[in-house]
Amino acid sequence: MIKHNVTESVFSASNPIISLKPEIRKKVNSDFLYPILESFFSNKGRLDKYEPFDVDKLRTEIEFNNKSNESESYVQSYIYKEIIQVIKKQTNGKIKFTPKFVITFDNDLTPFFDPKTLYPYSKVLKNCRIRRAINYGTLKIGKGVILYHIRIELQRLIDFIKQLELGEQMESSTSIKTQESSEQRRNRLIDSIIRNKTALLQENETEEIHNDIKRLQQLKEQKLKGESGILRVNLSWNTTDDLDLHIETPNGEISYNNKTVENEGIIASLDADANAGTPLTSTPQENVVWDGIPQGKHKIKIHFYNRNECDEIHFTLSILSKFGDGRIYDKVIKNKGTILTIAEFEYADNRLDIKDLN
Image (cartoon, rainbow, N blue to C red):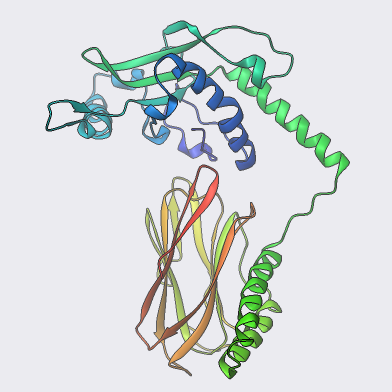
């Protein structure tokens, strides 16, 4: 749906990118776009019989009709790879394919309308009684539609966003909103680990658990090093040994020898790197920060690069988002040279999805 947040990801003049706050985008998707889609597909089967086409891969009719190498590239990468290649023929001879749809502002791509499907403006916009058929276009193989272009009207979208912002202003005038800092969010997550370890003490009173609790309580007193940005991944431990934070991104790996990676206009930086040389510290941290919402999947690894003190190191890994999402890992890494793959995350549908890998 509408998921972009940076102007650098514009693909064509006919399909401009809208820059919206994540919380606003979420509302636009759920309360403005989905009712339109439900109305459009109401006489074409249920909406769940269709799949959204990735707007990052959308190209316009103007580009398609361009008599150049770009037109040939369009057919190979867009029509063939993204749509036709996934059409499969089953053993019974029937074709298996889920038709796709994409949202657009482009009038040229949406020349048709069905009088039976109306924009649901009366439901999503206050005091709006406009009754208008939904404009759409199709891409077909034979008589079968493989892709619907569904037009949304920019002015009605602007009206909806104004309505949301007015509601936010009214809410903020009647209540005081507090936003957690990165340290507060990390400490809240650490508290949950401490509570779990304290519960373990009732069953198994060991020095190791006591030491873990003490280490975590000390960690809460440390300030996070590096910038916070939109999203940060922070690694902390309490020895003079050298651990390295590595993050695989869609456009290269971030590490001590490649501290900056750019992907679709979003910059990720390793801005805190500890114990790679003197002076050594017993409260080291490494920190990777993004200046925007990162696109694609990211895999987080911890490398026991060099032993200065211990063969077994307890560490905490924090994944913290400006928008309230986050997770913390309390782990152990043993022996110099070991690499642990901890987690994989992806920002999708305005939410930070995190998958545990260790």
